[in-house]
Length: 385
Image (tube, rainbow, N blue to C red):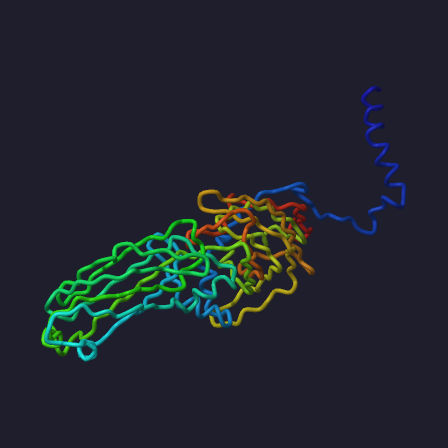
């Protein structure tokens, strides 16, 4: 009797439910099964990294300053991005020089006066772009076309609108016969973050032998006394820097979530940023898979990914970490595997970070190897059969 009462208590609510129209299943029953309503972890695949290499690929496409900057920008063995410029400060042909001597038959000290060179190109535009420089280095070389050594002296300076200072090692110098030699090699102080704009060799004087034309080492070779410079500086971000970038590909994303039949979900990512830049994501665009390499890429208008968020900047020594929750939704059907994703974004200097030299090793990385998908996975009846 006790067992009978227990069974009655168990089945009575079911019987009552079936007697009510709200619980009537005669017109059909929803057999869809929802799993993992709270959360499930799925491998991210090969998302990113978003590196400076991607920016450099787009650099030459930026109208005006982009192509100019690309011509001067180089990559060092350690991955550092630096600007380089070379040029001539002063040169004179021996034949022309001899004509200027008051008496070519005797050895003389010839004064060339003040000679200067302006470092142009992109360097004088960096401030307008909000860019700075670091690790500035100057080299000055000179060539002697004679088979006799020549002594010289000058008062060299490097200048910018913000500073000027002497260049060491050229108060007096010697030019060996028929050689090109380095007269100065100087690294500028770390606190100088504006580029050098000009070089000056003040009161340049050469002690010449008699009849210098007769001392030319090779009449079909070099005929010039020449003073040249090489200027390098690491590229860095200034406080006013801002750069919009469009249609930046994340490469082969390979986010395999199509198998779960998701209508919408939330992708949780922990990102590590070693770029000294805030990255503001304005738009995220998904492209449909291509059947062949020659097929033109087509935007998948059915997939919407929430954007308009900002990732904090950092450095190689002190990377920043940002937690992002990104909503993904299929307007119709379910979310397929995401293979190709492009970004429209803008880059800006990270406040209070200071001057940080740029390197191709810097980038935006997925810190964790998996992403968390929230929102539940619904398996339709046709998949359950």
